[in-house]
Each structure stands twice: as C-alpha cells, then as structure tokens.
Image (cartoon, rainbow over all chains, first blue to last red; front, side, top):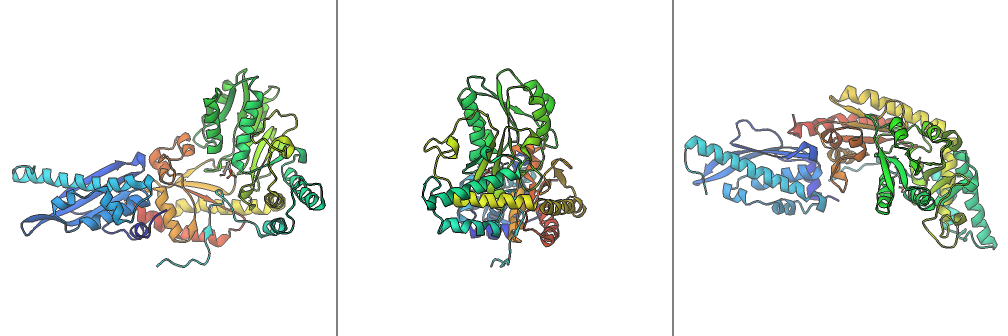
Length: 135
Length: 389
Ligand SMILES: Cc1ncc(COP(=O)(O)O)c(C=O)c1O
C-alpha cells in the first residue's frame, strides 16, 4: 500500500521537532479528523533572496501524514520563499513515489502547513519592518 | 534494508488466524484424491457427503445444537446476511421492524441499511462507555411489528460481550427472532445455543484456525428463513451451490479443536490479556483501556494512546515484526474513526489512537513480552513527533 520512499520517511522522518525562535509557524488539520501538522521555518537572506534556511515539523497523523511532512521539509530546505510557496501537494506526493488515493489529503496538509508558515513569516516581517506586504 | 524477521509476532487474531496444522491435515485429502461432489450418489460422492455431514456434527457439537440446525455458508459475512435478510424476507408480512446495535460488524450494519432501502425499519441500539447495550432501551424499542433482534455476542474491536441471555429472556413469549453474531466467541468462551436462547447464530471458520471463506449459521428448527442463494437446493434449500468440501471439513476439525482446547486456550488468553492490561499502563503514561473490564472475550484488548495516531502505531509495530490493528480512521476507507469506539462515546481524537491486540492459539509468552518491550518506545517516538499538547 505504501511505497518504499514513504516507508523510508516514516521510519526515519527528517527534521522532526520544534524550533526555538522560528520566523514563521503554520499549523493545519484537526485532531478530530486524525491529522494535525505544524511547520516551523527559519528564513535568512542569501544572494539578496530570502530562503528557508531551516525547517522543522511536528505531526500527529498516519504514515502518509508523517512521511509527507518529512518529505516536504526535505524539498523545502534551501528554497527561496517564492519557490517554497509554489510547492504543491502533488510535488510532495510525487517525491514520495505516490500515495494511496485515500491518503492524498495528507500531502495536501503538508503543503498547506508550509504556506501558512510562510504567511505567518510575511505578516510578522510586515509588522516588524513596517514595510509593504509583498503582492 | 529491512530487518529480516525470523517470525512475525501475530497479534491480530481477531482479524484472522493461521490455519492449525491439524486442520490442514484434515483438509488435504479433500483438495486432492477426495474430490467428490456430495450430491453424487456414487462412492466418490458419498465419501464427500460423509465428510460434510461429519463436519456438520462437529460444528453442531461445539455449540450444543443438533446437526440439522447447522447450515454452511461462504463466510461469517454471508451468515449474517442470510440470518438477517433471510428472516426479514420470510417474515415481512408479519412486520418490518428490526432491532440491532450501533456496534455490529459492517456486514450486519450494511445489511440493515440495505433493508432500510427496501422499506424495513431498523432501530440501532446505543451502547454505554464499555460497549454494552442498554436493555431498557431494547425493551422500549420493541413494537408489535418487530420481527428480529440481532445483537452481536462479542464485539470484534473491543471484545465486549452483550447480555444475549438476558435479551432472550426479554423476548420470551414474544414472536420475535433473536440472532447473534458469535464469530468472535467460538473458541474463546463456552458457547451453547440452548443456554443463550438464540434462534440464529453466526460462525466463521477463519477466526478459529480454520480456512477462510467458510462459515455456518445455526438456525433453530421452525425458524422461518428465506435463502439468499437459490439453486440446486443444497444445505436443505437454504444455501444452494456445491459445498466447499475441503473448507467445510477444515471448519469441522477447527470446531472440534476449539472445543477440546477451549480451557487451555482460554486460560492462556486470560493470562496474556491480564499482563497487558496491568503492564501497559505501568510502562506508558496516559493510556485508556477500551471495553468492558470483565464482560469480554479473553483474547481481545484495546487501548487508546492519546496524541498519537493508530495507523502509525500499527506500522511501527509492523517494522518490528509485530502484527496488530487499529480503529483509526486512517486505516478505514471512510476516513472516520471506528464506529464502535465512537458509539462508546470515545472522542474521535482518542479513537484515532486506538490499538487492538488479539491473541491466538499460537502466541506464547515471548510474543507478549516483545510487545511490552517495543510498544513504549513507539508511543514515545510518536508523542515526541506530535504537535498536540
Ligand atoms: C464480529 C464479526 N462478524 C462477522 C465477521 C465476518 O466474518 P467473515 O470474515 O468470515 O466474513 C467478522 C470478521 O471479520 C467479525 O469479526
């Protein structure tokens, strides 16, 4: 039912844990539905661009939810914010070698949590710098 | 990359059981040289007939029935379908009301949903926090047009037993049939149709170290029941189709063993369950035991581990070579947590973190100890990963 890749990430999830002083945090899901995912990001400047220099996650959920979270963090690390924002659930599930149809929503969750974390970062930055929101 | 596991520790015996080698031995001739059709009058056929009838006697014998009251089916699911639809169709001129419970196996619930579409009225009884039906609610649900009460004897997820004998007392002197799904009881507790006072009872071979795809219903003499499968009139017209001779022979042997080994098996299940019930809460914080502490089959224990999700527990156990199961939504097609745990009033969050351990004849002390050894680490790992506070 699960690909080797999924099992690999489930067995040894990458980037698990909390982050001290994250620049952005995003949480999606609902314990009633059986999955909750929280993503923490650290943003830094590199070559004039903002990149996600560090990312951590905490997930309550099934094998697919944990593997999607782990895979997402792997994909995202080092990406610019623009690139990271464009990551879709399809990118996550394809990188995992596919997910069973009923589990597709788990990869959605991961992509959504990241988007929320980026939004969180942008809104904080907007406040701190008083600068304009990016369009 | 994967660890080579010399032997799977199989703790999912409520799902299915391995074939007992003695059952396999009994079946083998009927997969090879004894290929006869029991309906044939020649020697090859008569041999097969004799084998089927011998199995029927054995199954009847384990539940205190007479052989003429045993009808072989193609599964426990078919048995439940036959019992409920068969009684519904044959008695619909008398009434269209059926009472069951919210915690039945899907093959009962979906059969009832089907009958609703055909004009039957179904009452689904509630259960309490332990998973036991409310007899007062049963009494107040009875109507003049009630034709059937179908309540499972032991629940397959939490192991809770229902007060079938009390229900039969309530129904006494009323013209209402009582059916019970006893698929999870055979081989775990003594089973006697007379003592229980039921009219129809369902069994399945693969839960008692017999082959898959064979079941039986006990149908008390005089019960009005229509067949689901029409044809050549096998099984005294109630279930046509050439008999699954090897399967039935296997079931007969499995039933005989279940009876002979009952005390031994039961004592072992009790010992193992008690060990888990005592030691899991000692080794792991914040554990909830699901089910009734006493009114239960001895081989099923169900726990919830809040803040973690059941499929992940099961798959980490699987990586350790241990097979178990969960009532979590994530293993169901509906993405909803177990209807049984939900009916018991367990919140979805907690139901998602459920783990069912079910023992069988071939488990030993080592299996229990191995589970106790690896489970705490798995729960800890998952809780560390969990964002829930
Ligand atoms: C309580 C109960 N009833 C019915 C069934 C169905 O039996 P079978 O698998 O033989 O169709 C099962 C097993 O899945 C069960 O646990």
